[in-house]
Each structure stands twice: as C-alpha cells, then as structure tokens.
Image 1: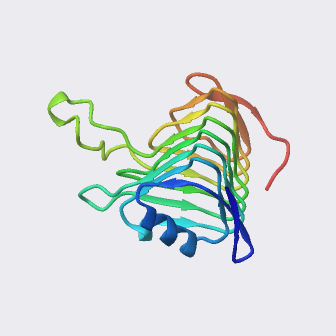
Image 2: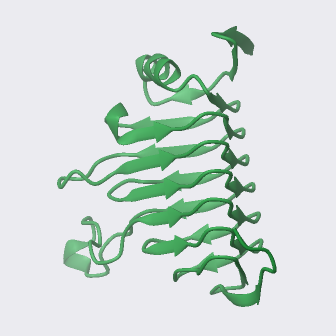
Length: 187
C-alpha cells in the first residue's frame, strides 16, 4: 500500500510497535521504507537517518541498547539499502556514510557475543562497531563483521566476508575478504 505524506512516498513497513512507526515517519520523513521492513529499536534517539535514504523490501534493521548504552545506528544522506538486508546495531554502533550503496542480502553486524560459554549472552566489548565511510559499494550477499571500518570509495565484492578493516579506494573480495586491487579514482 503506497500513500503520500508530506510530499514523500512511504511504503507499508512493519515496525516492532505500530506507535514507533508513527514516531519514525515523523522524525525521518526523507526515508523510503520498502514493503515488509522490520525496524526494532528501544530509543528513537539512538537512530539517525539522513535525507533521500532508500530501504528495500523485507529489510531487518535493529538498534537496541545494551546495559552500557551501546546500540546506535547512523545512516547519512543518499544511502541505498537493498532488499533483504540485515543491519544489527544491537550492543554497538553502526555508521553508514553518504552515497553508500548496499546491495541485496547484505548483513552488517555491529557486535558479537562472547566466545566463553559462561559469558555467551554478553557482548564482546573488545571488537564491536562498524563504520562504512562515504561513497562505498557493498556487493550482494556480503557480510560485514564487528570491528570493521570500510574506507571511503571502497568496493566490497559480492559474497565477501569482511573480517578486518579496508582502506579507502580499494576493492576487496573473498572469504575472508582480502585486497583484490586499487581503484584508479580518488575522492
């Protein structure tokens, strides 16, 4: 179901609670949510979306704070998030820079659980958070793991698993991702 509101196009989305959908639409009128998106957050103040952000169908976006207050999602202007993406800022911060293209089925995971069995429900505080700088392109099915920074202008190839940071203007791919080449353009 498509409806016009304040000159922006909204496509029906599923949100954790219906009242949060109204708050979300009021705070972020420049965000187009695809059909069947699931947005879960405990505090609207921990989420920030820029203008002209497109979120594809059936995406799951989660930003839930842990006991220490971590759980922040910042998506800057002109970002495109493809269908079926999974972005989890629970227990960590995820920042996505301007003009970033995120293809379908991409997972960006801000924090992971502890490896120690007795502490498995706790977040691993040594390695958390993801930063995707401006003008990056993340290919279909890529997985971005906690503690990673993807430099401005870089490309992550389809199906890659990114386990460490990527410098600016490089192409990385594989499992685990490694440098494939430099980009000839500069920012």
